[in-house]
Length: 220
Ligand code: SF4
Picture 1 (tube, rainbow, N blue to C red):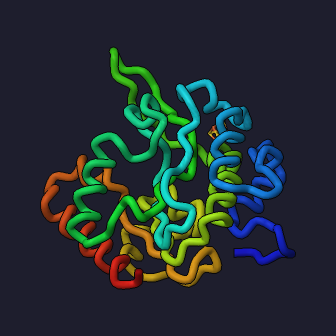
Picture 2 (tube, rainbow, N blue to C red):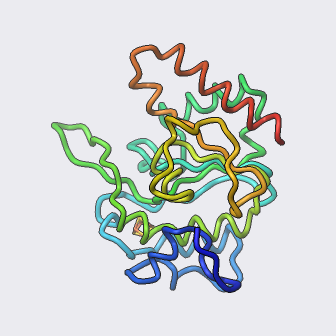
């Protein structure tokens, strides 16, 4: 993490994004979640504006103590215009409930706000966003962090963890452990719930995910 003057982006990804086309010029000077949501709706900072139906901004309380960050909206999120409402979102809801975390009091968002996919028959198959697309979009997440100021920041999956904590971060090795970061007083990474849906032993993976979320709950 490179430090900088006030207003300088906190994440390594956002610092790199100063060199490229980014959403940064669209971020309102005195952002609120409402203003950010409205401004992001017209974002054309990267090619994903053409693949996604709409910008899917974060949702939740501006006073949330916990913020959960995933990779990007999926097929159902793209249609609904809301984050974590598809199968992975339902699994997240179940795990949060088991860990004793109230989603209605949290803030939930993604690193990238448009759905990237490729067609396979009638299905739209998720494609991982590339580094340039993440760099273009991360000013929205930086602004969400600046407005919400969560006490506990949870990265869901490798894309979120590496965008916020550096490309060398390994969720497989460091999941569930609080990480030192100036993004929030407590920062923890765990898997993305979609990976549990694909796992051979879903029960074991879900149980490990709930354990990580209990670590989060203990710090709220
Ligand atoms: S993915 Fe992000 S940067 Fe790209 S067009 Fe959508 S909102 Fe803008």
